[in-house]
Length: 621
Image (cartoon, rainbow, N blue to C red; front, side, top):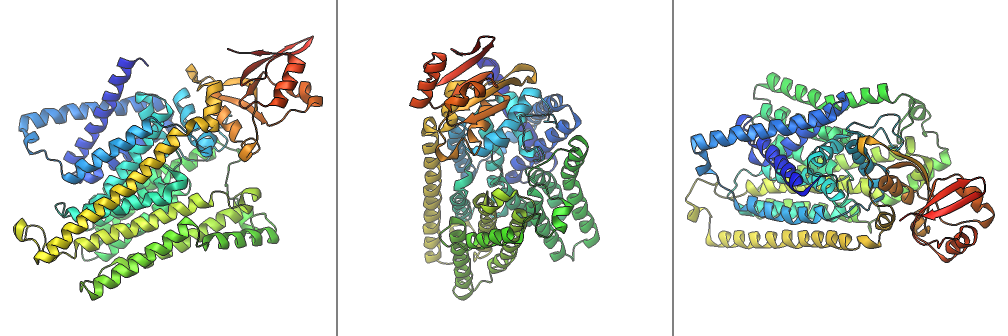
């Protein structure tokens, strides 16, 4: 894609997204804070439906064009009615936009590092972009075919028109993340109370502390799950007196949440419970009509997940999937594991859950102390009855149920080797802690808003405080929370910057320097047989990290790895491959390759030449 064409396509993509946002604001009367996440989730679901139907590229192109047309008509209407004169941006919106730009600039220049990017998330997107289709049962590049393609569909849509670099992929997922954070500010009704925005910004920035293992500089979805659940909370609360509008807002967000990952249905269920609670709480409204709207919205949101289940049952018959729970494993009570193994898993799990030195446990304890202290302070000093303590109890129940569910995952569906070391536990724990902390922050924001002595509009702005002292405390609070938010976000930014700068010390960089990042036209997969050689530091070969990176970079399905040569078996080993890829060389490898093949053994790709006279190696330029 040439530079000029690339710029035109990026501009068209931005115009299309803007067109949809303007349309939803104008026709659906969506609150400004909810428009971006509503649009992103809706586009992801539409592209996902197109992928299931078999016309991924035409459907995506149609979505792009429709958005541009909507923007064109909106601009005409704006000029005709001169509504542009009333266009205003709040201080919070400007600050959010500027802060987001810093992070997007960083994402665009970042590269993929985390293991799971290459084992699933990135390679799936790469195959979708290469074939303009969803992976099928014959896709040898994809090992875990039962993972839904919700976020992947949105990333595909962005990359299809903005470029397929790793930075574009990260920025596409960044759109999903920042749209959800912006939506959380929708719980605030008094927009002129900047203290509320500052407090919410500080609280949301704290969530990054529990996202260290799943930073936004990768395509993992463990952070998307809790923050999209928080969006469901915000939407349900904001439209609690307009249940039908809440249901309309929630449908695409919840639908996307359930097809981001298999466990997304758990997080969506938490959001649905809150929606049902809001409906039951306001039962003096048109109860039955609102109840029907709630049921219909939940049913509609389940449609993408249901279609994915049908798709898996029909198109992937006989394909063994990771973390698949069978009826036999459930009936066996122990999931096919011996009582001793189950006991070992349970003991390690309990020890990990209550490890007070771990970040998740420290977060739980810290937020418990903060919530209890704030509730007591409000009751005895402010003489206000906050709902924070109720939210704390409800979220504790969610926390306990979630951990029990994760324990069930380890016992019933996870392979024994991974279960015995609680593979992924820190990520799973981080996800629920983000939801737990975020839920408390949202509730505290609402409680603070309801604690002001005067409401906005009751008195002139200069008289909107009970006393001079209360105004002074308000101003100091704004300064404190802004400073806290900026400090935490700068720490997160610097952490991401450090990761980006250290990329040239990582294994993906070393592989890229040797192989490049290959893309083939027509969806062609490299069928050559590759053998990668590197050291096994941090188990990068035995854990298959090197091989997954090789699959992604070469877009090849036949990739093996080795960390040492045995002289007696060297010829026999290499005879099974077409290429030898030296990622990290050493003295022994150089000696053996020089002795038997007359090559230097330095880093590079060596073609293995098969002939009647034996094997030969030729370094490719």
